[in-house]
Image (cartoon, rainbow, N blue to C red; front, top):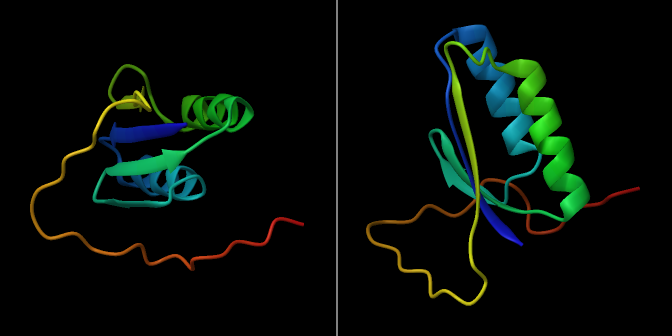
Length: 90
C-alpha cells in the first residue's frame, strides 16, 4: 500500500534520526514528506521506530495510507529518487 510519511521535528539530532528512519522505508520524497510502499509489518515497524525517535510534546509524525482506487495528481517539477531502482534484501 502506498503511504505518505511526513514529519516536523524541532531538534536537529532527532530530525536527522527521523530522516534516517523514514528514508529506510521511502521510495521517493522531498524535504520532510516521503512516499512509502509498505506492507502491514513494515508500517508497524516504521511507526514503532518513529515513536522511539520523536518527542511527542514537540514533534509531529503523520503516516497517511492512500486509497489505491484514487487517482494521484502531481504538479511541479519532480525529482527522481536518489536511491537505486533495485534493492537487495538478504
